[in-house]
Length: 258
Ligand code: DAK
Picture 1 (cartoon, protein in one colour):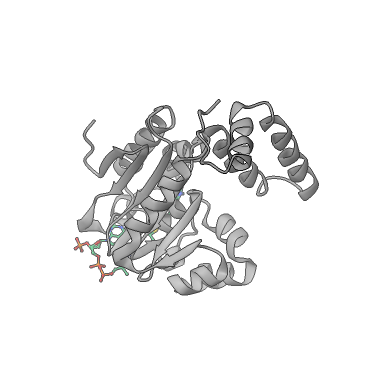
Picture 2 (tube, helix red, strand yellow):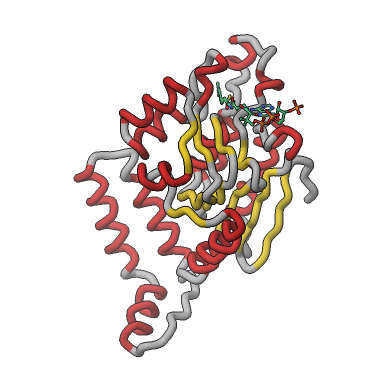
């Protein structure tokens, strides 16, 4: 299927989604978010896809929600229309790992989109920010909640209240991104991480994703119990037998997602 705001390519079990509105620094308009939601839904149910990567250009991952599209909307428009709720739900529902490969600006909704992914690999030129305050609004796709959980209250307040941008180096130090790589190596590193994940058992990958995400939704005790039960359950899989047998036989495991 052809998209107007995305370039989508599925190869070697990785669905690579490139945000493609270069003239607007990949600002997230309703069309882009709608197309993204369609691709994620289809990748989630496509057996050929094991990992999803979302990226932008060297200049911008996404410079935020599309201000030009939003500017004339009224409270009733955004409230009754529930702006961005349906468009972002599919990302949160996706059970396959999603990596954000971020170069350049990841601002406002762009930063929030990256934070909705499972982890972020940043280029050394990446700039993260929640500058909505400069537009007289608050973040609307989870920025005040997720950034606070990732980097702590003090830095989250600083970012949201001043609207300043955070460098890739600061973002790594603060725990917002998993690693920083030279911009020219961003896609190579990201695709190599994706390939590594794609080799694992999908059953285990899904269990890991669900378990880590649960840590944001529950108490420590409940979260550890959830993890323990998943650990127990995985002993019912063929892939656990294969993984452990392969270790003892000093060979590569051949997982069959069973
Ligand atoms: N929206 C629309 N167009 C944008 C844009 C954006 N967010 N960011 C950049 N562009 C456009 C510019 O208007 C310009 O278009 P032309 O003027 O050429 O037509 C083009 O992209 C290139 O931008 P610049 O000329 O400004 O490029 P510079 O390199 O000089 O500056 C910049 C780059 C990223 C520093 C600057 O463009 C900038 O400050 N952009 C805006 C960043 C921003 O404020 N982002 C936050 C947007 S608000 C909600 C859900 C979500 C949200 C809120 C509520 N609900 C569910 C209720 C989220 C809100 C946001 O994300």
